[in-house]
Length: 244
Image (cartoon, rainbow, N blue to C red):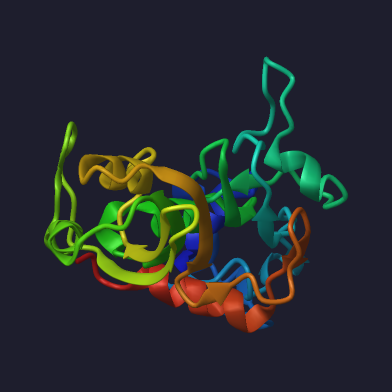
């Protein structure tokens, strides 16, 4: 995500913000080999090479991982109860990765992990309205009237939810369970489970299948893959969209 040049220099420990401004106006700073002397210039620290007096800034390499989280795993980096954590599935990545949002203990599916804190904050901010797609197996078969309550927004203990996109995609008469595909853009705690409970059809199984344009295609349960450059750039564009 583009940031002011003086902020990047300051964060790298080279100088204070004010001294960084002096370095810029003195012509001692280059971006991708070209002198930049204008204050307020924005650069992308993940793509642009910033140097002071010819020396590139040393920064932590950024990693972006898509994990297919299994059930029975907590979305934390450590757990005092000794349960398996999402961090264990990408332990070979040479950085401390943090989850982008959360999936509860019994929910499986797509979870992003990264050490890019600013992108994480932007992607999880409610105002961004980024779609998250879930497939839920629920008890019984909800009527269209009940599904419409989810589509319009339903009252939970922490307020009314934003309208969801909901489709009934299957019904198992023998088990008396239905399959729902639900798309939301909020990130409330256990939101899908609470929404389905509110219409009288508790969730028996829940999986997140997509985050924005990202899917689980080619990623087995408990496995991960690194996002490519185009995917990271596309996420940054989503994060830069004006808030809804």
